[in-house]
Image (cartoon, rainbow, N blue to C red; front, side, top):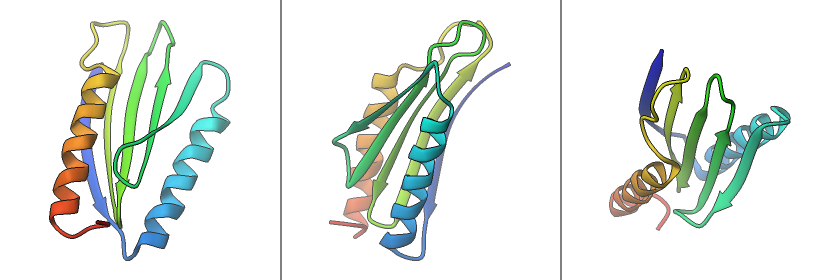
Length: 106
């Protein structure tokens, strides 16, 4: 099984979106060995998460712009990569600009 996706969510306010980002960071950190968590400079707040597992590699970039959060991910079972972290970062930048253009967090 392989999958690639995008999910965009709008929260009631910036505080709620920040809380969700904090939870995502905590959960990714709790995964422990094999997972890499980085903070990027996209939007108001961005996390890059990857797992270099040979059997089931996973990559994701989560961006917060104001009260909006967008997640870009891919998951695969020993198949060819569906996307790179660089592609997820590009998509996150695009969505952060779109959310900003709609008045979210700029």
